[in-house]
Length: 67
Picture 1 (tube, rainbow, N blue to C red):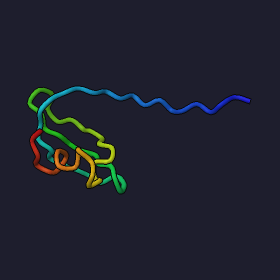
Picture 2 (picture 1 turned 90 degrees about the vertical axis):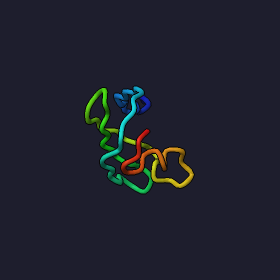
Picture 3 (picture 1 turned 180 degrees about the horizontal axis):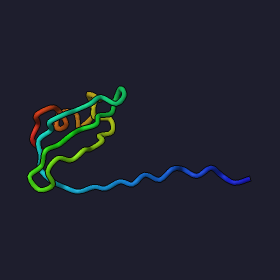
């Protein structure tokens, strides 16, 4: 009997500055963001646990936030 395999997700991480121009609540804790950057234009990002009050991403993923 074989063990079930976990799905692998393609995750790309890079550092850039931008302004959050749209945020969408995915579930109780996650957010889907649209960010306007100088280098890459408009990008989309998924922030895990960003809606949680204890999360360090709570304020940096707020609407119209520059980070």
